[in-house]
Length: 176
Length: 450
Ligand SMILES: Cc1cc2nc3c(=O)[nH]c(=O)nc-3n(C[C@H](O)[C@H](O)[C@H](O)COP(=O)(O)O)c2cc1C
Ligand code: SF4
Image (cartoon, rainbow over all chains, first blue to last red; front, side, top):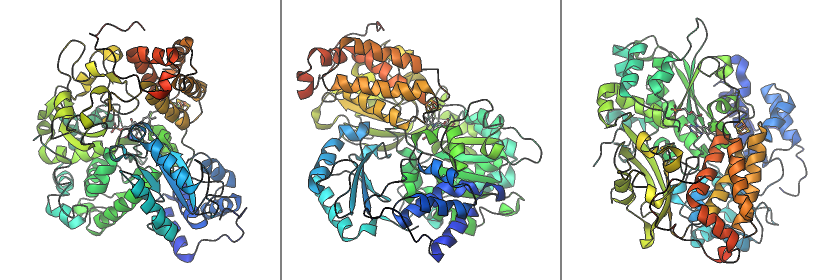
């Protein structure tokens, strides 16, 4: 994924389009733009990251201007407008997680994968990212991989989940 | 054992499914409201209950509902705020994941009270798996006739949907939430107009927290007066507390408002006391935005009275010696924790989350983060402490939305109560890199000089 500079073939498969239509149906006729954040999540799951052709495609689907998509994609921290690994390991670094050892977990992952915060492994599988509070403060330290929360982290747990995602990078998505 | 109104059934096997939820008395409030009450009567019960918003500000819910404008022929909307991003707060996720139908039921009953025919739950994007749980519950509610057209033959129609954010604390602020739900950047709007007049798509809108909406269910079932019997003074009912930090039993607890902080912190039923035999150093009782309390002001007020888990008691003493109940994010620090590091960490959070519209917030949070970083890493000067004080004061009250205040208060409180620890970082630049300051001197409270 990271070797690609930009996407060439962009179109959702039929079943994803059906899901997009269902989501558009949740909003009144004149306000379909409300579906944008959800559709961008879907596009990111489908294409890995959001480059200009992907965002233009989303704009066409929603009948809005491309710039309306760009400004949203660059505002929210979950959207990647640069290539990332197949699995993002997002470690919470905020207050309660910090006092329960988040910094040690980050260091452990950095050493294990040979990358720094924000970087992607050479094989393009893992990106490590520190993020702000994910709402799991009582189960710290924690990280999110795709949709999955991994809580009460220990070095052993980190080893196991890295194994799991290396074997199946899509294990972290539950659906569309 | 205190009474539980929200989580009473949360641990029943299969309660996330419609059938089990219904068997345990679910959806009774919808039946009662739609068949036997007018919308205004529901609002009246909520007023009587004394329920206050559980999202952080504690504004009386019944009063907020009665402010909703009702122009002819204009739709009204109820939005549920499930953005839950305030550090220390994780109760809404717990409730939605464990007992999703309670929120759906609350949304139906509340939407009926407000005359909304279309409602949305806005949930933070990181909770995507919870969004899927809610969508499943909503589909079950439609299939069983609790949503859609002519619900229970009452003539009342309601559609309900969930929509995600995508990683932005600011979208928990109600006008930013509305912008985001419209598919835009989460920039808070200038008020007035308030959402009650001009909210989603320019229409009258109420925004309520997940827990607030869930609380409407027991209020309608048992009556507002019954609900108001629980609690103390103007802190009625039960409250979900997210407990985290250096305690033996972190987690989400439902308490009756008014139990003592000492009991909550130390009893086996709740936090179970400090972990590893360490001593208490400080506590942030209501989420990262509220003032931190040093150990000697946690279980007692400055006047020496027992501090209670209530809006009033936690705020006793104002910002000089008190704090706030806020969102109920109860973060406990033991003697090994560094206040400067924690303050830097929180300030980095606010800087990261500032939407950037107002210069005091955008520049001020970044500036404070830099100053705190150099203090924490032993490069600070004595003047930096006063500089921090000055910056936070210039942010407070000078911004479009309360995120500015939320960033300023933790810095102010940390300096107010832990100035010696900041000074120690300046005086002992080597030592502060190797060890922590420890406990504040066991001093008797003296009014802060700043
Ligand atoms: C920066 C900021 C973040 C907020 N985040 C949340 C949040 O995550 N959840 C929430 O319910 N309220 C949050 N609020 C408060 C909301 O603006 C609003 O007051 C609340 O949703 C009203 O609901 P309530 O009256 O039921 O508490 C936040 C406010 C600010 C200023
Ligand atoms: S106070 Fe901060 S977050 Fe709020 S509108 Fe201003 S810049 Fe944005």
